[in-house]
Amino acid sequence: MPAKDKKLEEFLSLTREQQMLRIRFLMDQDDAFIEEHKRRIREGNMDMLGYLVDKCHVGESRLQVFRFVLSKVKGGHKAWRAMPRKVRRQALQHMFKRHAGNLGLYHCVMRGV
Image (cartoon, rainbow, N blue to C red; front, top):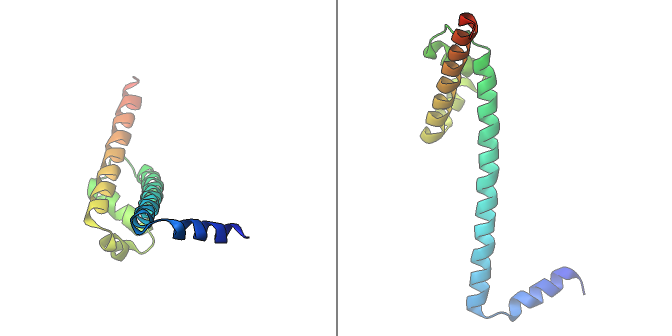
């Protein structure tokens, strides 16, 4: 008998409550996998945003940095507006922290610290 048939027979031999618990467990595992996948994508996107921010001069304003990054993102402004508000806020915070960090590094280098 193939392995799939054995698993199906095993599942069908369970009581209705046990079957429902098993299904919920499997769904929770799927949700955890999906959330982990989303987290990895977000981290990758943040790395890409950081790379784009690093291309900007430290003397540029936050607005100029934001506009530059938007100009390089596929889909531009429409893609930005399509993102959930929470993700947009996280992306902005990440960009501005990275830009401020670059400015701090610039000051340290110019002072010779």
